[in-house]
Structures are given as C-alpha cells and as structure tokens.
Amino acid sequence: IPSILLAISLDNVTRDIALISCSIVVARMFYIVFYWLNWDKLRSTAWLVGIAGSISIMVKVCRAKKTPAIAGVLLSLSK
Image (cartoon, rainbow, N blue to C red; front, side, top):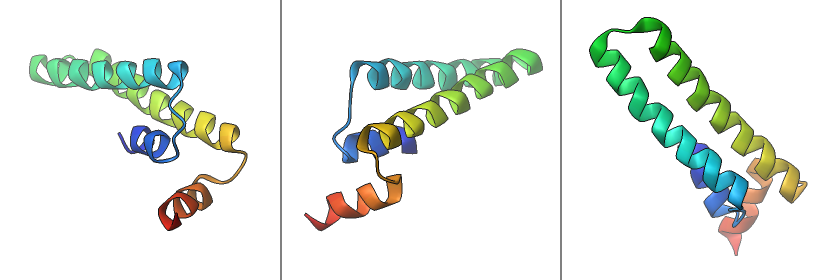
C-alpha cells in the first residue's frame, strides 16, 4: 500500500500502476482468505504477488520520474 501512496503523491498514476494496484489489493484479500483456511502454499503465493506488485510500482515510479523516490516525495511536499 505504501507504493500506491507513493505513486499518488508523485502524481504518477498510469494505467499500468492502476492495474498493479488492483492486483495488490486482490492478492491481500486472497492472503486473508488463505490464512483463515490455513492453506500455507497459496497464502505464501498471495503474499509474494503482493510484494512483487509493490516493488514493481516503486520501480516504475522511480524510472518515470528519473529521480530517487525519496527526493521526489520531498520535492512534492515542499511545493
């Protein structure tokens, strides 16, 4: 979820980022269901999908801005 907030704060919400964000939310919901059902392999897979989505959003945002993510956040906050 922090990666989604990073994309929003840097005003870099593209179609790809929106789709990845939806997949993160769905993966988190599946994680909860698999946790309740005690299905460890699927729970780990859902967790991995969520983490991979978060990392891919951070990479896409950093590449689009061509600045480090932290510097971009600080610049957007100072405006």
